[in-house]
Image 1 (spheres, one colour):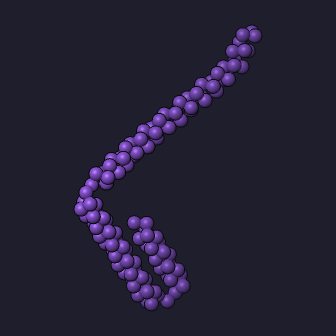
Image 2 (tube, rainbow, N blue to C red):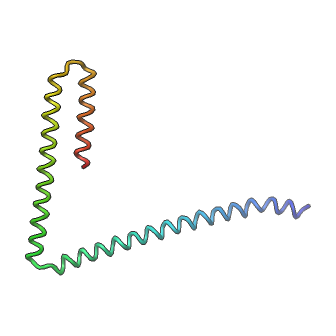
Image 3 (tube, rainbow, N blue to C red):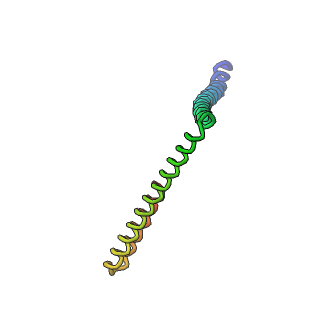
Length: 119
């Protein structure tokens, strides 16, 4: 009888320890995957750094000019989209008379502005 009581009492403790071990194994696996991911990213970074170090002046100049061109294109595109959005909002705002419709239009404008800023 004492054996059965002790077995019943400590079986829950053993189950709890096993569950804790399993949770820790799972965390260890996740950390291992995360470490591998970081390692891959570091290797890619090293490859890019070596590519820059090994590049000639002319190649670096071309890459820089391409980057600046792409950046200017991006900012110009964003400015055009933002200006078009503002023009449309003002045009629609002039046609609306009720306060509820204006608040709906403002909400849509804010949502669209946020979408543009996040893209």
